[in-house]
Amino acid sequence: MKVVKFGGSSVASAEQLEKVANIIKADKERKIVVVSAPGKRFKEDEKVTDLLIELGEAFLDGKDYQNAMNKIVNRFSDITTALGLDDMLLRVIQDDIASVVASDQANELKMDALKAIGEDSLAKVFGAYLASTGTNATYINPRDAGIFVSDQPGNAQILEESFEKLYQLRNRDEILVIPGFFGYTKQGTLMTFPRGGSDITGSIVAAGVKADLYENFTDVDSVFCVNPTIVKQPKEITTLTYREMRELSYAGFSVFHDEALIPAFKAKIPVCIKNTNNPSASGTMIVSERKLNGNPVVGIASDTGFISLYISKYLMNREIGFGRRLLNILEDEHISFEHAPSGIDDMTVILRESQLTPEKEERIMSRIKEELKADTISIERDLAMIMIVGEGMNSAVGVAKNATAAFANANINIEMINQGSSEVSVMFGVKSSNLEPAVRSLYDMFFNQ
Ligand SMILES: Nc1ncnc2c1ncn2[C@@H]1O[C@H](COP(=O)(O)OP(=O)(O)O)[C@@H](O)[C@H]1O
Ligand SMILES: N[C@@H](CC(=O)OP(=O)(O)O)C(=O)O
Image (cartoon, rainbow, N blue to C red; front, side):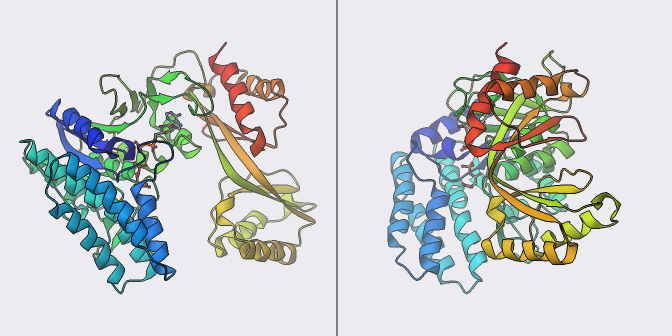
């Protein structure tokens, strides 16, 4: 049995949904289908999830949300009309939005319930379409499927007990269409996963039903060894390990959500990334182990939006508990840190800039000064992280030398280097403005020689 997930680009229009239906019909092992909300049909287009957020924000600000409502209903009506489906489905979407807006839930729960309508409606529409073409298929709500999650709006985590309940889906005869991106708490409240979280649903369902394969359909033939918007036509990756993919997607490979690997990995379900627009291409397999191919580096990931918090204090190395107290200050502000390279008398904490509001920053800086009696504290902004990843790096000599040579060739200063203890990745911090030339130079070094 295969679980297949189709991303926003794969379900963006009626034409795409026809391709999706053909893909499902081409393999009778494709029994469970997880769908995203309609995504972009062209570069400047809007994702339905973004339109739902726009609608929710307009409502919460006391503004008119009819414009967003119209755009959402039009997206779905374009699809239902072209697929020859009943108008009833459109009324259900409007009623769903109206009932969330009118509910007396807290604002963040309302936003989650609104965001989920994109996936939920598309699953209903697609289930109806499959059935209309003579396929034995039906929509199933995540609550009925057994997707139970923690009480964390916009950031839900799967509860362990879900997997046993999901296993029962194996007994169903029909093809099941499950909306991605959300689940329910044990109390029955809807919670969404982080953005891009339909990949997570697919992985959870694949793990739950113990699928032979989790196929994740998107709009590229494979995972490329570097972001294709930075390097034109980069090399394709045929096989990756879970560890490599986890590191790459964490550091910027937006093609697959970084949290989506864990359920598949734990249940040892292989993952295949494939293209809805070219399903005969073999795609990229993500597995437990792979044969090393001579190149220690399998991919180069990169992401912007980081800051570093630098703290120095003479004899820091002898002060027991310094690191803990520093990280405690961040914890009090609900800030998670990404990396914390340290020296003898200094420590740097790398954070995602989006987490640090000006108020939090002020409080953190003054607490570090007063409570930790630091000699120097400074913040560096506009940092980008570039990560080279590969299982082969563990045993290869000279990878770091070649990587630093690539930065030197592009005349780029490295602000920070951090080698993970796993030795599967090495991370470099650079100024954001240097990200693209640095990535291109690394690509030339490791893939174009
Ligand atoms: N290393 C990479 N390999 C492949 N695609 C990548 C990579 N890094 C970024 N991407 C981008 O990820 C996009 C697909 O991810 P996403 O937009 O989340 O798809 P979907 O809408 O199918 O969920 C691709 O169109 C591509 O631009
Ligand atoms: N629709 C949600 C969840 C998702 O997974 O979308 P996509 O498959 O388009 O990345 C979002 O936009 O975040």
